[in-house]
Image (cartoon, rainbow, N blue to C red; front, top):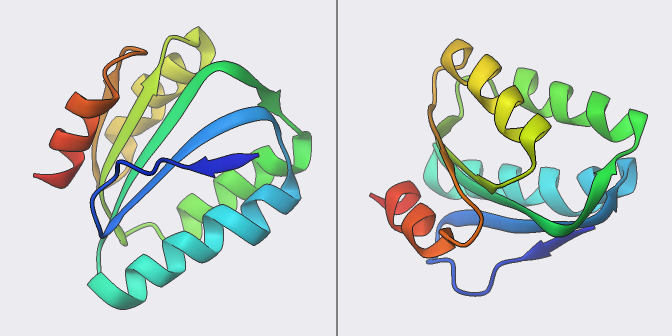
Length: 120
């Protein structure tokens, strides 16, 4: 499930991933938040945190993640990922340079620094 990070400033789509992320989590939480921010601001700034409560993605959620990125290819301005989960960090390092948004990985525990960066 995606849980909103309450310390995020207005205009920042900020969520913590907990448990297994599913298709429903994308369709009812993350995608609507991204689309609302796009409508209100034009460009979207996102912070996603993957901590110890994160257990993985369902196969359909992985497809949803890909489709979200492709359907909003030019809508993202900044993407901050807070994680010590190796495969998440490696994926961001691999695909981050391919997307037009600025991306940055922050170690677990650096959520405030990530919020500062994504808000700048």
